[in-house]
Amino acid sequence: MNTLKQEALTAITQLPDAADIDAIMYKLYVIDKVRKGREAVEKGETITAEELMREIESW
Image (cartoon, rainbow, N blue to C red; front, side, top):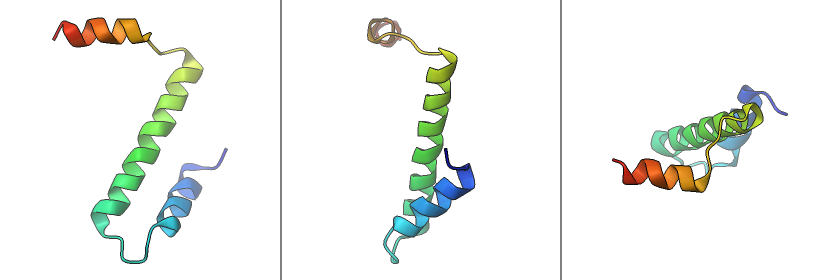
């Protein structure tokens, strides 16, 4: 697995040269969320779709 810095640099270099700061920040945000999601799955910190639906309905 790449380091976070390597992932960020790769993602930024793949953006168009005219990309603004919002596009860059969004890309980094998505990378962060995906990494955290993968870590949660590895730790078994997930819930089923049914559990999620119950949580949503209880709001």
